[in-house]
Length: 260
Length: 266
Image (cartoon, rainbow over all chains, first blue to last red; front, top):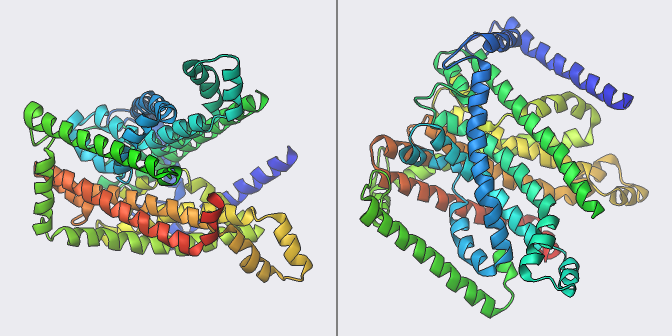
């Protein structure tokens, strides 16, 4: 415990030194703050963002706006992706029918769909959620499919010996044993979706004045690099928090299967 | 993957039949839906209209033909990608091999890593303008991060037995790194390069959608602005094709540089 505290404080110390270096460069070279503001300005901005309204509101409004888009797209990806992946893993014909389409769409970066998404769903949550859906779904489908196919054959045989039919094998053997892999897919999906959210807000954000991507873009348009950097920090922190909490959950699920 | 799964010729034939059925039925449904039901080529062009859009692109659209725009995107991606590898792989290896480097650089990498690369695009425009250098900067970032991470992991996870065996035979620190740790970690490093390539390709499309005057992402945006959905769709298809070609090229490269990996997988 004291070891990790030591590591953490060393980490903080080194990081503070880097911040000091950043500050020293802007101060010694007298860098134009439009171009690269000193870290102090960025921290001030972070503090004012929380209280002063920009666009549609204060920082919390933008965070919630982004999270809402993310949640919409991600929920759709889960609702479509997991059943589709399971079906592909359990029924060979479905796998063979869906795979060619899936492989044809996969090399297209999700953000490339953004302009079409705007045409189809209008300049609102729908367009951004569509891009997030496309980004988050592939790893969810792949892992759900893999999880079913990798079900331990001995478990299936054992269930069959006790007289379980194919549907019961699916519901009571394959599905429960698939949970850890499915969860890994969800984790990758969250990371992909979070990245796509920011891209979608930058590309399909015209007309909207909410969201963390909007704040970054606004910083560039009004020549306030400090605003862009502050918004990037918030995005990074939320992304890291999502990752850490999913990691925790992941450990729980992995442990859960180890016991069964 | 799916090709490797199919062991017998019959299975392969079955896969081909299913693939044909699915692709043909999607095309037929798309055609019927767009031509007979939706009847709005501004929202969803029919397959034939998309082929028309591809034709328009090959004849030249906003500054050059399809090759020109593809070349413009590829030039930026390859430049940024190579620089990203050139910085990321050695940095990741050094961080894993020399603890002081890790202690100094590690905190910065850890803080920058969770920021999605597209978030850098506006800042890059502010710093470098909307020309090529700003995009190269963002591509470098997108390629560098997975390379640092994977190279670091690759070196850190060198099997102890290998290091110990080499050490008993009198290998020095340099030999240990270049002849044991790096070769044994090569598959992981190459995997990082693969992730980096995908990231770079997705990032260039995003960057060109935000601000550009050439490139495949720019074509999609231009099609959108000019109410030419067939051009947009043709742009997306071009992106898919170039992406696929890059994937194949990388697979070839991977099988050359780590030929033993393939045999392990089977």
